[in-house]
Length: 418
Image (tube, rainbow, N blue to C red; front, side, top):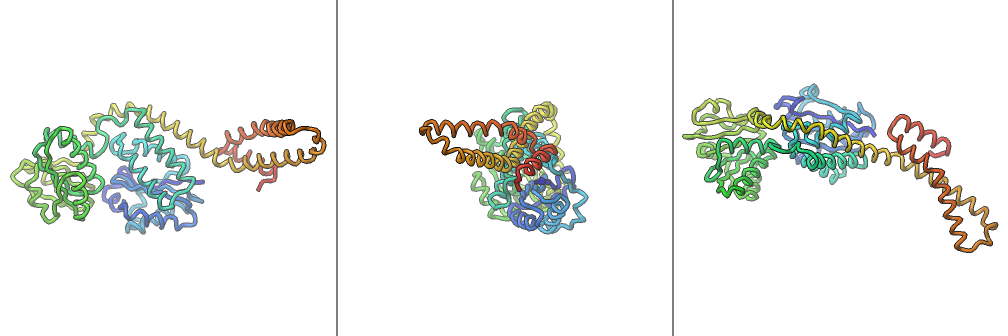
């Protein structure tokens, strides 16, 4: 087993590169097919969010596995290898395992401790598993990482206060618009970030008995219609964007267009609050200099998140304790799984010897009744179990270490196991 994690995130790559390489949900199955087409890769999971694109694989060999994933990302995203390879980070074996645990725990997120990443990791894993892309190695890894991420949120306070980009965006809106009642909010982009912001806004409005006029605009009208129906808003046409922005009290833009969609010419009489959550930005920075508008971008979001960062940072040691315990549980499970076939062979061999010897002495035991014969059977089984207990425990304890590999090899050699 060689677990390799390879990817780009908000720290390793500029937004333009990250946005180009990131994969939409409907493209990920194709990426998995391309990755698993390599003879050096047995299993794979692709995690793609607005802040990272990561691939986890069980590879036969590290270098060949790395090359296969890198080339598959290039093929599926349409971005040349030379355009993103310098931004790639790679984790191998124990480092890859720990990286996934830290991602699931929220330690590797833009906003420390944000909770959305755990659901994103779960979705990535479940999608890969449903598509037949995972097996015993990644199933065990992701199940333990998800379990540990859940414990982090229940056993520590790392997720308190502003917990995600969408929640931070809503807090920024509420700071400048204390009541959502009667506010016309135009959401541009019905993707992951946009949907999260809209959901959070609707929840706040419901909790405060506010009547919110939510209009959702998306380049794919069907997505805007579906989200509007789900949240009780109404869809808007991208062709009407100029009018909708001019009439809005609040505009939240979070598309993957890669170009500015909203400029000064779209502003109405104001005042209008605009949040630009896209990478690269959807809103021309010149809008922020216009007296009719107040423009907030991702840096503003980070400023808000930093207000609670000290309290969250204080929870990091507690989070690491939970992660360490989760890693121990995972490694113990892996060791047990790796050594169990050998232990099964050892116990079957010993029981075979026991059975043969009992058969040899069967005639001498003919005077025993059924109850006595059962006692002899139980006694011999107990002796075998007692004799094998110490070596079995030692093999389990040392499994996964160089010493464990040596003990396993000696055991196979001594008893003739292939």
